[in-house]
Length: 223
Image (cartoon, rainbow, N blue to C red; front, top):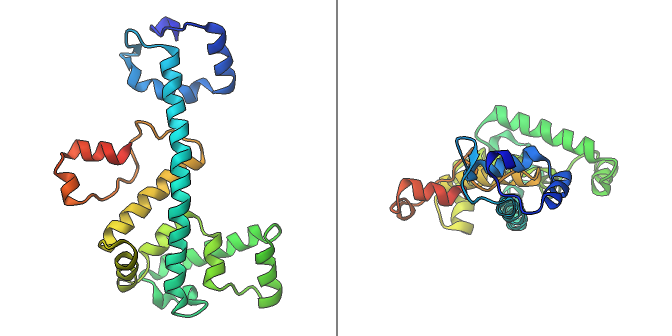
C-alpha cells in the first residue's frame, strides 16, 4: 500500500489491523481513494480504516431497522392469509403463480425439517398436529427473501390491501422496496460492503424524488 502512495503513519498498527481484517476485504474500500491504481495524494491508512468503520456501523444500523420491517411484514402477511384459513398458504388459489407457490411450499418443508431438532415449536407441531403448521407459525421460518417473493405472489387485491392499509402507497412500490431490502439484508447478514455499492435491485422512487435528478436519486437509494 505504501508503494501505491498510501500514507501509513504507524506501520505496526497497520500490520495489526490487517491481521484481523483481510486485505482483500479492506481493498474494496480503497476503490474511491485511488486513481489508476495509485492512492490519491494525501490519502492515509487511517482514512481508509475510517471508511471501513463507517460501513461496519452502517450495517448494524440497517440490520436494526430491517429487523423491525421484517417482523412487521411477517405480521401483515400472516393477518391477511389467516383470514383465508389457518392453512391458507397451502391453497394455490390464494396466489398468482402456481409454480412459484409449489417452490415456496417445498422451501417451507425443508426449513421445517432443518429446524426440527433445535426448534421446540416445530417439533411440537410435528408431534401434536401431524406436521400441520398454521400460517402464524410457518411464517416464522421464512427468510426475508422468501417473504418478499411471497408478497409478490399474492393476489393483486391482497397486495393492494396490505399496501393501502399499512403504507398508503401502490403495491408496486412495496414489492420493489421489499426486494431491495431483502438484498440489502443479505449483504449485511454476510458482513458485505454497503458503502459505495451498486444495489442489485434498486428501489422504485416517487416522482418528487426523481425531480432531484436521476443520478442523485440513485445515489440516495444506493448509499
